Image 1 (cartoon, rainbow, N blue to C red):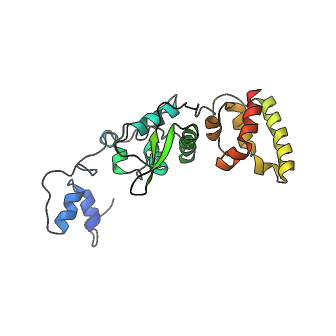
Image 2 (spheres, one colour; image 1 turned 30 degrees about the horizontal axis):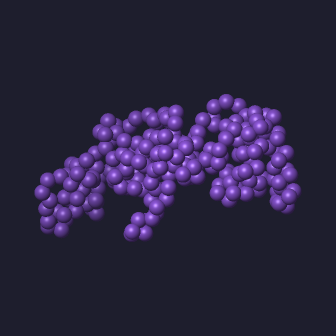
Image 3 (cartoon, rainbow, N blue to C red; image 1 turned 60 degrees about the vertical axis):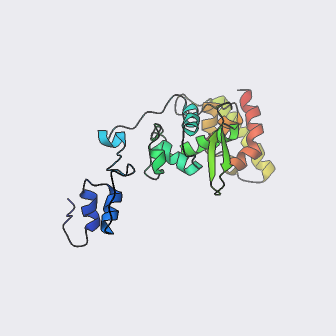
Length: 229
């Protein structure tokens, strides 16, 4: 148990008080605040915080639709990193983002995976980067853009015949590019491709190990190969 009465523990004593955080700061400087600030964990606690700890929320059937609807419903647009923090339920999300109904909706996925999903939606044009007059790069939703199929790669088994074809293609590309085979694609990426069988550039962009550079270099060839599976 933390001893809030020990010397130098003013901060801990403040945290233990059921008084608005902004009011505590103002009191320190001899000022006051009329009413609640409606912006801290005391004056405006999140609904999930009032309920207490809960189990991880299962992933929705259509993460792409949830992400686009979340961005479309934001009062204050967010950049990619802040959007991922919102969807993951991270404390690093901006205060305005923590009030979104989608806060923590993708907490069952990892940061890297949600980040890939966001970039996949950018690839299809469902999310569009814009720069604000203040120079901040934020994302806006284009609800008319096609949505890729995201997630779901953990279910099912890899198509072994397709995996063999992908490995054969990888060997050819590695020889042509004069690089080791793993530089072209890792085994884990091949296994995910053979399981999910993505059919579009957006779905391809959500596969682990396929960043923008590899998509530009290998994307068309991979989609052509996958189309025959």
